[in-house]
Amino acid sequence: MNSLSGSRKRVAGAVLHGAVLVAMGLCWAVPAFANDVIRVVSPYQTTTLDPMRSAAAGNIETYGQLYSRLLRRNSETGALEPGLAEKWEISPDGKTYTFHLRDAQFSDGSPITAADVAFSLDRIRSDKKSAYPAPLGPVESVTAADAKTVVITLKSAFAPFLGNAEIWNMGIVSKADVGKRGEEAAFATVPVTSGPYEVKQWKPNEKLVLEPNPHYWRNGYPKSDATVELIEIASPETRIAMLKAGEIDVARAVPWAQIDELKATGTVDMRLEPSTTIYMILLNHKREPFSNLKARQAAGTAIDNKAMAAAITRGYAEPANTTLPGSIDFHDKHYPGIPHDPAKAKELLAESGMAGREVKILATADAPSQQTALLIQAQWQAIGLKPVIVNVDTGAWWDATGKGDYDAAANWWYNETTDPDLAVRWAVCGSCGSNSYSTFYANPKVDTLVEQGTKEADQAKRAEIYKEIQKITTEEVAQIPLYYAPNAVAYSKRLQGLKLTPALQWTLEETSLGH
Image (cartoon, rainbow, N blue to C red):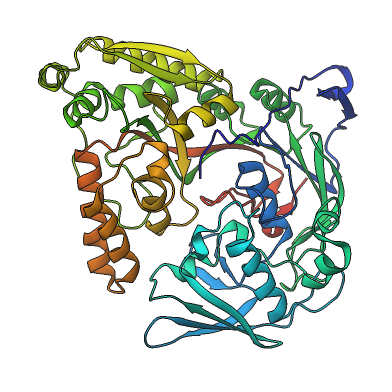
């Protein structure tokens, strides 16, 4: 759910004569547009083809092309609709979900059965190597009642369950193939897939080449028979140069400073696509000064997030008003947020007894992290704190925040669904295993509300529960909300139907090519 994943290693790239890219000592030629190839370039790399193993952005983007789930989301409306399950029923007590599978096949032509579904979901929820078992935490058992019927029994009623069943790591894998080849070999290079594509070639740290799965269950999809290349290049300048030169079709993660330039070209489709991303300042509640409520309130009131959003994102992001993403269900858009009031911040800091305290702000080498840290430093220094920026690499950042060995750090995270349950469990729940995104914020009342939100079926009542969570956690400054950022993606105009969804899924199967 976050950006600075230790598995997201970056690869440098440069455009040379003949459009030759250099990455980690590996070279490959990228010719001008070939009508039968779609090239997507991202700073995030694919590190595993096993949908259970990693929550890194590059892997999440890949999983959606290789593995189908029980349900899928309509790419236009975001509504849940049938996937491998063509229909389902929910018991009156809300504890039993019965899914009926459609006739579908894996990429090797073998049938997708209820046994494959049970095997896949049990791996996610109980395997020690599972990167993200939380969405299946409410599950008591997964049973294959017959070849086409899956029965999932919950420990108690859980309102967001259907949405959780559509998350990126819920892709269905072949039980027979894993049993035959072994887990490591099955996902090493050419896995058996259930989604719209299968793997043609994988060169780790370079590119992943996909081709349409001839056995895919959605008739007529993928719309194009084009091969897809997912290429990792860390340098945003290189990505943009390649797009302008017509060497690639998509440049992911366009820097804010280059958006206007790309819009002005007339040859690039520059889009700001909806996302569930929130940027915030993490505060360590385990130690002073931010174990003190008034010190946190002082720090929050000192921050001008409107000015920060304008300075960092060139005005393309929306200032955040609560601790939850602005595009998820039940976000309270009317909540006033933390007011920017430096004079009040000085008063609160004096009352806290923390004036003059040194505050270590963790930052990584990337430009947004450095810029954010400098702005935080200036605004906190103005109210009487002594902020010091501590530059660390990504691995050290995660190690320090995970252990609580820091005072403050800026970062971002996104929510896999529009339902707020996973968001609150990740960001502000002290008893949910996340340590409130390593802030160590804990409020038993909030934890109780989190559980109530999962059991309440009435949507109006759920809305009130999540509004209360936002109010409490923002007033107590669980984190300092900065801004809600869209996904900045630039596309070749020859593509029709391709976009990046808020859940970081490319709609490649629905993409067609023009000329």
